[in-house]
Length: 182
Image (cartoon, rainbow, N blue to C red; front, top):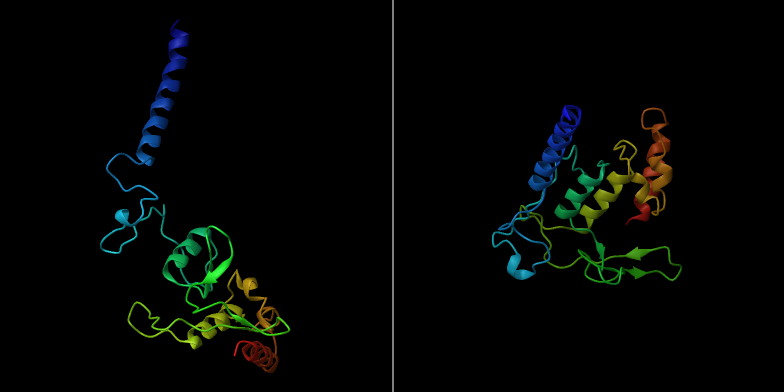
């Protein structure tokens, strides 16, 4: 009997510990709930989430973990996003769907009027051009630069080594890329 009792205490202790952890990690009554619509929105415009830990990096061109990407997706607005019901691309910062050239190789976006950064500075098309250029720049060394490889010249330029490759070749590759993102 004492042997059975000695085996039960560690098990009970473990179950109690697991119960405490589960109850600490689950939402208790009185807190915000998900899916509440407009009436559940914070009147101060604040988004409060549990990120578990601080992200290592929130530079959109250098981030590499899902948690970091999740933060930047809440902070920066893309040209396009996806409709949650249909999964089809819809405008976000873009005013409308892009104009696509007859050969399907050139996409032209027009920005919505009145877009501003949090400091009040107007957002311009050159800001998006800068972001794409920085994404493909091999000196940035972003782990997700491959997402820009759909743009002419991005892969060729990004695959170069800024410390070893000829500066003239680097400049030519950069120009090829930049010419494709007028």
